[in-house]
Length: 429
Ligand code: S3P
Image (cartoon, rainbow, N blue to C red; front, top):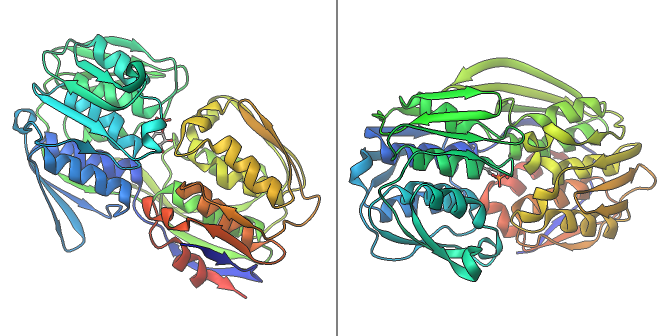
């Protein structure tokens, strides 16, 4: 599918973004391990989270959709059954890596795989600690890539010092730790998003967090419960950037998760001079949530590096677009992890924005943008099958000269199926 984006005069209105992707995955997984019924409200019905539902169903867990809610009927840790076929995680890194943790604890054979993009993403980072806990795992290319074959069971608790700040790695080890006796600990170089820790506590597990160190105690009794998923800040960010960069814009993005380990983009946009107000802060299912108002203003360049990077890693394609429209230099460093996402997002961002006429230089672990020099140029571009690149291109197109055509734009279905309709409904031509 090709989508054409016309430049807008301005943007006005209220926006509801879909449920948080990271939380939707975790709610289904913990629901599957809990005893009793888990009801998930505002679940993200995107392709990635549907992959998690299918994988969990293939393990014998009942999952239904009732009146727009997902209902998981878990039977505890011992209720999962050996799947009859290969488990397909589709495009979803969270599905494959977190499920690898759960399957490592299960005393049966399973194979996890995914689409072409997922089969080129690194799996050694989860295989190594899970094998250290006692799971027998083999994977393609010397244990580098999926498909991964797992024979689980008989795990020992470990303390794992992760070389990467990755919530997927941390969560895989913590979820495996649920099946081991005693205390499993993960220590990260920089703290990553903490939804697994929060949701584990919410379901009744014993979890302790101290700075960059998280511990979970094995064999807890998890109770099925009601989880209300906040709106996804990683989807909201496209409207926050559009609202901040388009003159005269005024948007209210409702019900956005503002967990501090996810909300780095808000800090950076404010630092860039964006006119952003956080209102109506509240707690929902153990997570902070708010409404966010954004109005068009003059943006200026900034530096994005260090410990904040994991708190905005998925928002960097959108922030790069903001930087292109800002006056002055924006430097992004310490973000080499972007190369291991749905596509190599450093190369993809540099290709997209340089094609649109932006002065951008690629670095090994980021990029440098000299923004505000000239207006962006509408072009024909590719999403590289990456949902966040498709949405970033669309936001760039709102302020470009001429039409921006995005090829393979259907990939927005991964995290935000109604993205283009939502954008159209806000556009004032
Ligand atoms: C996620 C963790 C991050 C993020 C991804 C979702 C999660 O990946 O980029 O979109 O739900 O745990 P890494 O763990 O690879 O950093």
